[in-house]
Image (cartoon, rainbow, N blue to C red; front, side, top):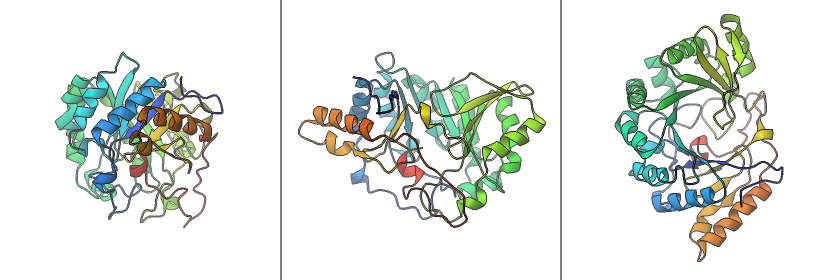
Length: 330
């Protein structure tokens, strides 16, 4: 039986985190001294595989592997290969989101395992700015990774968090660079998840403002292109490319939500912005895991909320949720 929530939305897309660990420390995502999970708390690769198969048996057709940074997990490619064998057998697409630092090493393996497109997080093309924002001097590795992915035949989409006073003025250059490479660019509003050193209010940049500024420079027209996620796209006449907008704050997109997220510890979050969760690890480790997983997924559909309620409207406000994006799965 397919997964359908109480609002009659069919859930066909799982974002599965394989680790909360990351080799960057992006300032809007986590603190410099982030405390990562003990390895014993994280699902084994076998458990992650079994969990994914359980979702596929319930009608999930798109699977995105996330983190943290998924490619820092040892033997992660073995999981990709195992899941790739389900392509054409219940699974329509297997993809991942990465920061790109290890992409040059794994691009060929990903392609051979059945991955055809990936998202790469990149907020600036300025090396010094990258080092300040990510707290690691890794821009050359990321650019090498993007080049390796394209050489391997992977379609690449860039994800850029729009940040007031940090990369706001660089967005046109990022767009033109990406489109010059044949790469789509998606802009994302900063999300109020987890405590960080900076005040997100200071750097929150509504994409309504960004789009208005872009439309003074370029000709944007609505695109019918969809990738299964929340982005809404526009074609850019001057560059021949596409730009996407993910707007959890300025334009709620929950009415068409088809997604759930599972963390590396097996906690299922029916909504990125909600406190609701279901313990899938307990189900997997129960005496009858198949029955327990079925019941847990049914419960997730029962409690999935209609929408999230993200807000960034005051300096010094607490984050909407205590958990960081790296814990939730990006």
